[in-house]
Length: 123
Length: 489
Image (cartoon, rainbow over all chains, first blue to last red; front, side, top):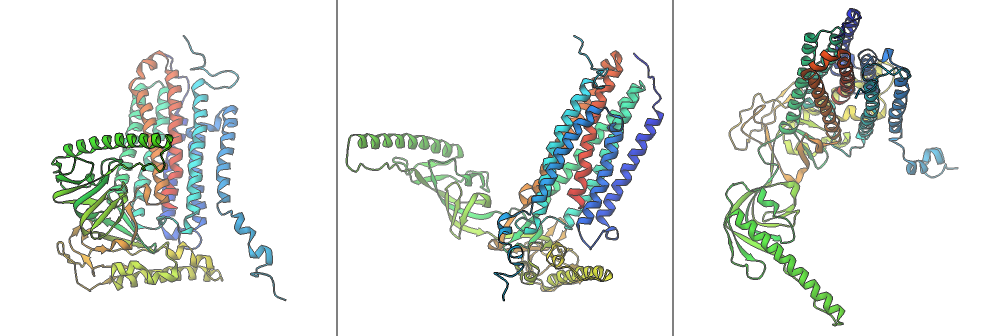
């Protein structure tokens, strides 16, 4: 059986530090969601809360991906592969921008056709 | 046969086989979950239109699961740390420590799934909601089987073309009531069907006979048409039967299987008509919260829910809280020298309101309607007593309401049918749960059956654990996003 040839003590410290960081970020996520003083913008659930919550989640996900999944020193082929995946996933999210798209309504949008007047601007 | 690049990487790609394979698999997984996250965003953006049951923003019962979700997040993070430490242990050629870390990871997976089971059980078995005709929603618990119609049947008419009558599955008693055929195919009238097996046997025999008779009559009709008979007799075979019970049989009719009902008749979706006497169709409900998210603010004071609750203090408490919320909004914008935008007044910030209904101060009796008109307000909490049915509930003394069925638009547990949130919640978390189970089984395999490979080539086992670990981290990564969007935001 081959013997270990590398000292992993530094790697283990990094993994432990990342684990603790992820725990701390989880506490931050819960605090942001539950405690009104940490609420961003107007009281209640707002887009600002959503952005911050997802930013924290993205930070946590990056730590997992780059450190635990070793993406920080991965081969180029993996990055190329993930580029296509990320583009696809991004495309799926872009689709949601069309959630309110309603061409039929827009066609009769009085603001666009008469500048806000119901039929036409009176003389 | 030796498979190349299982342990050492290929020179051109720099990757060993399994690593390239797992990354390709994970890429496809990103697309799978990406589609579901996209669906989540679409559903959430559509909430304001009010076509669905409300998104559970701020509902206490929803908030109560936050801590379960948070603990599960920590459990999955710990398991991810465990996997990388197991991999390092293999690299350091420390089999014992590798075993400990791997069993720790599998234990984390078990804890995660157990907590998920607790949450699912609570949602499916312990929490219900009732949406009233004006879209106001009451959260709480349906008492007993009162979501079903209580009916005493005497006579049952059914088709011989369909399956066995669904009503037979709703019977209260395990003892078959026993029927006599009072109308049906020729030669069967007067037949006594005393047991369930006798009924089934009679039903299937007559269904076969009906099908044969129908085929025969169709053949006759076609032959007459082909031979030029003017106005041949139309195809006509009696395909229904009526049976009468020896004594009225009680059943709880499942409303999902029933088309309509009145005081004397229940019509099932499968075409079965049961005649008899309606005992009650009222729903008895232990109310905990009221959600007005889907009711326009100007219509909230006249909402049906206040008639159902029949308690002015509850109504007063609700609007007091609404005023407080409005005041918070005004203060927030005043500090910035602005007025509250109109969309905020229309939006969910003012539309989402809840009354928490504590049990204290109420002396409910067993099984009788309380006539007490007294209601007290404790800060923002209200006792619901007027019009309530007594009895001890899981959440303390009773605050049960009798709700006429005609006021109910939809009712059910917090399962996938309850609304878009619950549908996407169960879809995504169940899919994630399947990944957790699958990943844990693979890692368990590596630790239980890995010793032989470890002794032969420890680097090969380390590669396998790295690949299994990559999948496990991906599972963790998905949960990192699921937790805030499903529980907090």
